Structure formats: structure tokens, C-alpha cells
Amino acid sequence: MIKIIGRQFVAGEEDSVELTTTGSYYRRNGDYFIRYEESEATGYKGAYTTVKVDGDGSRVTMLRSGPNRSQLIVEDGVRHQCCYDVGLGPMMIGISGEGVASTLTDGGGDLKFRYSMDIETAVASEHEVSINVKECAK
Image 1 (cartoon, one colour):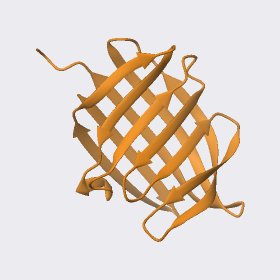
Image 2 (image 1 turned 30 degrees about the vertical axis):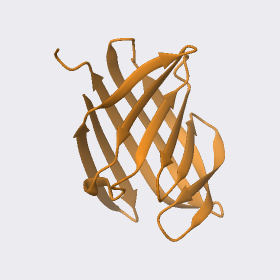
Image 3 (image 1 turned 90 degrees about the vertical axis):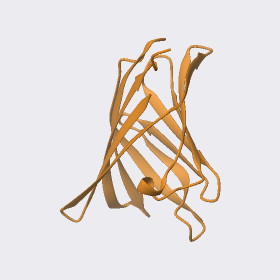
Image 4 (image 1 turned 90 degrees about the horizontal axis):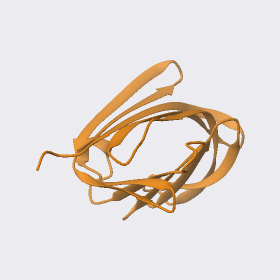
């Protein structure tokens, strides 16, 4: 069971999205992976998102497949140039990590991270994401 809460801040306004879904969760080569299908609530119905958390919890990579492909890399104190597609075609944006906290274990746990998104170095929005992973009862 995967619960995701995303908050976006743009020009003093806040918007939030909450998604509770099932998906896959596993560890490979010391890194944790969370994979789920997007929904209408997130605006990306038909897409799949994979969240990779480096084994030391320092970096999060989000990959979205489907019609609007994107790759975002969030690492505390580092700005990465990433490809992002919101349906009008892909564009390069800057992602500056402002904190990654992971308590993920083989049995689940929590992941929280913050980042700002910029276009040509002008901050466009700030984001907070919280993900909780629990094993479903058998």
C-alpha cells in the first residue's frame, strides 16, 4: 500500500494532491524502488511512476513513463537539470533539492523530500512530497 501526499507552492498559493494506491516495492543493489500507476487525481492517468531511493537515502530519482515522460533527481543541496513533460512537449528544468529523509526498510517506511523547480534559473514552484509504504495484509 502506497500513500503519497504532494504539495506545490506557486506565487504564494498552495495546491495539494493525495493518492493512496497499490504498487510494487522492492530493494535492488541496496537501493529502494517504489512503483505505482498514476491516476486522474494526479493528472497523469495511464502513466507509471518509479521512485528510486539511493541506499544511503541521499538522493531520490523519479521516473514517469507513459505519454508524459519525465525524470527528476532530488538531492539535498544539489541542482540537477532534468527532463519534464507536462503534455506540451519535454523541456529542461532545474531541480534543487532541499532535503531528503528516508526511513525505508525492507518492510516499508517513510520517504519525505523537498525541492524547488526552476525554468532558466527563475524559481517556478516549490514542492514537498511524502510517501508512506506499507505491506498489504495477506
